[in-house]
Image (cartoon, rainbow, N blue to C red):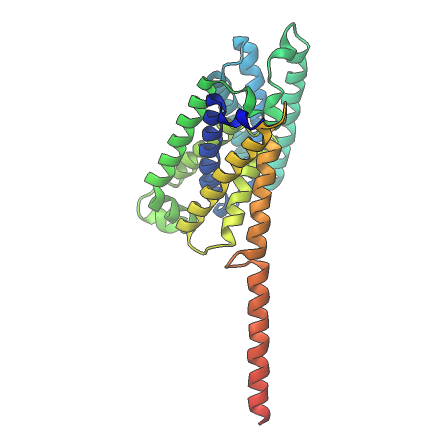
Length: 301
């Protein structure tokens, strides 16, 4: 059983999900500070129709083409969210919920149609729901790695710009930054991370890989730089460990195991995190109680 993890293809898949987790952890920090964590979930669900339509057009499962379809569908979803928010009285979170539901429903409807076509049930598109890294071939792995590295490069090359844009957009505008341009770049890296991850993690669970590592990292540090580093580390470890566990079973979906590993890291951070962890807060509370008791004792004397 353990020999599966030593095979060349499995090791490439493990490496790709590790890189995916690192990229998702870094992008998740941007979404966290933009207060748009739900956006990642909405765009992930919005990507499903694009995957199925791309398959219907080319008639085969080519990950690069499916990614293009997913990206196009997700970007259309993002434009609809922006249009609903700016043109109506509907709030942004409500618009996200609407797009999430409508696009995912459309994707499931199209997927049902494809599965009823001759040979459609052998397309493997069902793996995009919960993720199945085991069905990835070498070209799929290479595509994931290249796009994930591009996302990481964009984040780290423009790290100072991201920091100013996220924490003080008005100051960034005063420095000559294009807010629309930064928002567009943010949407591009978010969509890219989502669409390269849906094969391994699935459209339903990819948002968790973006959200959980960044929230976990927040319990350990107040520094944005170290938050990105820790979030990327947690995401990478979740990706590789979850994929390794799923590879030990026959037909086990990858996404749930990756998310469970990320949840485990979150629980550890919630309890032991040095900034806002339960244990640290309890210790600080007890320390404060002792100091108050000592002050009252001195005043009594």
